Length: 450
Image (tube, rainbow, N blue to C red):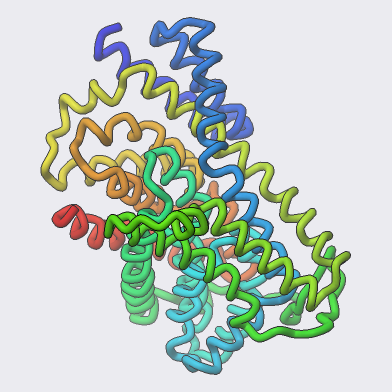
């Protein structure tokens, strides 16, 4: 097939996926498989090879991230049962004080709490953010809502084991330790700078409390550890360092493995424990042990059962994203686009950002747009001569642009933080879009040295 034909069919497949999701409310998993199937048949790959490619792509991505997602979600489920987030936020308030707590909370969510499913983390942390907002000035809601939105969305894209980060690393074949290190280099300044810029704009005349906030009919009390809506009594409340220690050890092992590899150090024992799957298994087992000591065996097992239920949709979505990526690669899109984008410059990374941003505006889901854009760009990375980690990070940054009315996170932030739709557009849509643009600063800087 001609280059134009391949490009046209790829465009039809992507637009078709968007239309199915947005217009006809087709489940994203089904839409992505349909799009991959269409591309395979239209590109002349053939019926048998199309089916094989869809299956192989799904299997490849599952082999790369399946256990990682499961272990991360299980750790998050146990930490949620222990009330770790509530205790952490209260600790941040004591240490940093009301003025600096939005930055501390946003950065903590973006870096430390990425093992917890986004919507669950938002539901737990929102009442705490509202309580903190009352301790600030008249712009407290704007400050906390912006910080929460930026921290949540940036974290799932840039921080391992965030769902978006795992998918981007797997689809672009970036070692997880490498993505962890460079993701932290990007996410820390991004969160701090984007929160500062957005807050400055909001408190200097743009935020109107009378129009941008809505009163609550019933003010919910701050939650302790809960299970199925029932408060849970923690038998032996461990220190925060004990609660989060296993997760931090796991991430430290992954990072150490990446540094050892870069330094060309060879140690079989270190290589084994720093393998991402083994490191997160160690973290999960440690978290399980802490949870069992504090809550008892039955309660921890119930938490893990809920975590496994939550991980199912995540795994399916990432798996079919792998199917689409494999089909795009089989269609030869990477070689075609490589002819039109020059290597050795920052321009290709801008193109990557734009592709991901356009997909996100159309689809409205950060994770889906990140997965789809990564699938499009995976075969292109070698042709560009750019380190794949930069392509992955740029795709992630673009997928943050314009979180809007089709996003579940948008509506949760509106209802849980007491904002009007207009106010949520200012804090969530604009705030996360600022983070999307700011993130390209450290990514482009990294491109000059990698």
